[in-house]
Length: 126
Image (cartoon, rainbow, N blue to C red; front, top):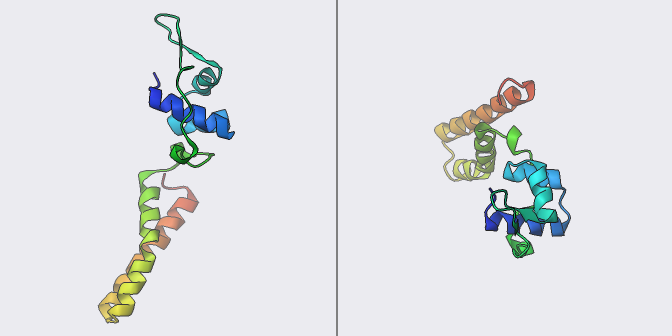
């Protein structure tokens, strides 16, 4: 069951114009649940409407617009993104410490990222 907070986010995203199936992917729920929020929910045990009194979350509190491909993103992909974000820091380190060991570390760092990308594009890793 969705929390009041989640319902508020969903309502805010719907107001913004996000597609229902994108919202469902973000929350890991069936698109029918998003439609229920859009049309007013009913609690199954007591049959009462729920959710109409919950106000949409404000724009600054919303996640960025979809589409969301969370099911296709692995922990390894997230780690790769983090490593790529560190490239400038590695370059700064090598520039301030121009030793052969620092340059070797930079080469190994870039090599590891390149190998990971090759594996991703070949579809061997998820």
